[in-house]
Image (cartoon, rainbow, N blue to C red; front, side, top):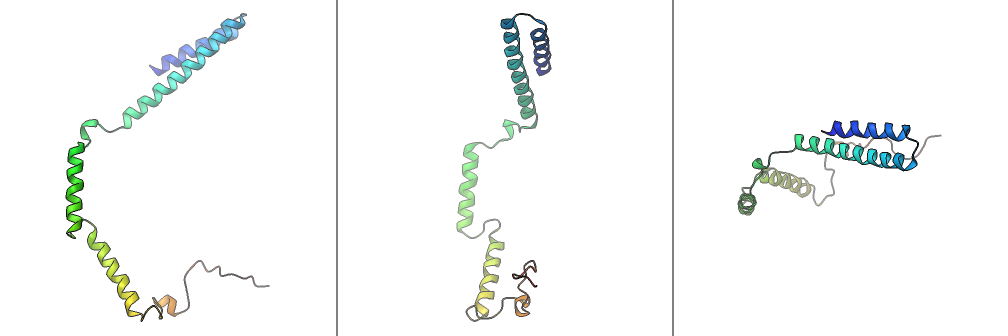
Length: 127
């Protein structure tokens, strides 16, 4: 159907170029503009409907709220999904911070060797 709009717009442009009447030419050009916009919108709508998900696969708001409540309840008891990784990371960071005597010592072998990482750019230019 959008291609029909484009075909009629092309015909309207042809009529606008062939006519001797300014009024008819302006009417045909405005009609062509409107038809091109309508055709483009139809193409965009068809593309969006082709890639959109079915509404039947979407969650009901009540089910989504029940899932949120269950996740919140599980999160407060410490059994949430992903909670184990965060707690391990927190413990590891606490061990690194705690074992260094208040942050006085190096945190890694790279820091101990004086290589602080980075891109090696370092400031200052050698002449």
